[in-house]
Image (cartoon, rainbow, N blue to C red; front, top):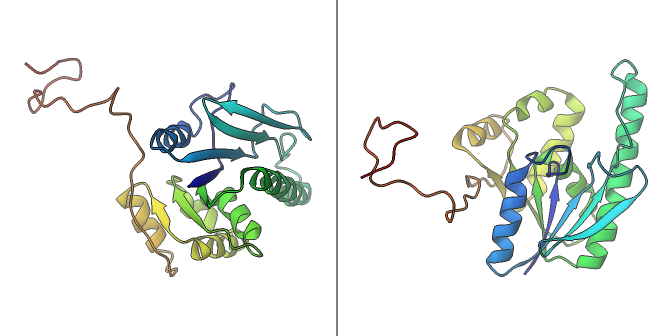
Length: 210
């Protein structure tokens, strides 16, 4: 199976921990034997108007900066126009990556804005997508009517919505949308992080079990 990941967050040089759990899942899927690609259209490290296609530890990764630069909060009209232009640029990148990668499924991480991109991208395509939601403050985005409409459409079209915690699942369920939900926490590299069965209750973080 060929899985193309479309993410709102992903690590880069200025911010190596931004969405690091998405990269870790991509690595885990590849280790499991799947072919994995990543599309990250919101990388501020990439010069506006260019696309970087690189092999990152066996994962073909497309990076672009669809916003092109910082937005001025005092100019709401220009911000809205910039957001529209960002969607167009990001969709162009996604079309390019999907055309080269030929995925069987699109795995979206963080519905705003990547899930909205997936919704528009798949409207005339049979490509299925799922959304893994990490954003604990998702309710803040649904407070705006335009975001609520777009996010509802993106979530409802997804084959599955995967919150990473029970609390986040409850938040999404509170919106009252007709969704298929399944809670699945972020992956953990068990070669580095394992439970210490010998640690007693109340043991300090620096102590090891007998």
